[in-house]
Length: 354
Image (cartoon, rainbow, N blue to C red; front, side, top):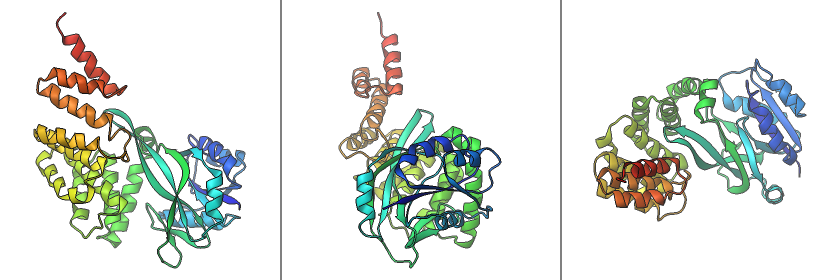
């Protein structure tokens, strides 16, 4: 069975070539819908043998996505963004999925590149990107979702496909003014649906990425005060980012309220890690160490190193703050090549008497 790649783009000349070069060998057709580029985006797409169509931007991502689906020649479509580059693609598994149930949705692994004070981090998530366009389409003007046209629930399957996403990196966000655009669209959507917890989560995340931590806390609080299904993936990330927003706002005591969500996320190293940071910032060092050690006992979470060198590093920091340099050194050494741990080891060794 054949597959069409469907994309919507605007001013992506710095990213598009790499994206299309990586995916080109695995798809039978490339559909690129341009929503108003003023750079060489369309020329790059044409150079990669894509079929390029114009779509007047109407502040509705679902409308643009669905327009791209109408241009596909094949029933099965794979959806990517220009800031996503395939790093692994199991074509045989994909074929078996496509020759099976037409009402199934395939979820790829997206590796998000994140930048903070400690440098670059990577987090992973599963996201729905492969489906039959006759059965599914998009809904939602911002952070659009794949839904069945008849509104019924549907099964998903994890695909052996991985893509690297640079859209959350500080450089890309700044260059595209992405946060301001998303914030405006989300606020407009919430005007019509003020109790939509998913929209509140996305707005809170936009505030967080912009460094507006107080606004992020306020928005996440609104979401958490509404009925929320804590088994949903976005709910877990909402709780975790809420914790980071509180820490960045230096509202450490309020962060202790995260303990109420342990009943849902006791086996999540991502949740346990931010809880450990909350304890740490409240001077509750024993609880912090115990919680960081719990991170190391559970399977890998979404953030790279969340059950290994990241909690280990923070345990070392606690021991160093307590003046227990032997224990601190031992834990720093367990962090492997983690840059911050190596820096602390150098500082400690340079301060030792000769």
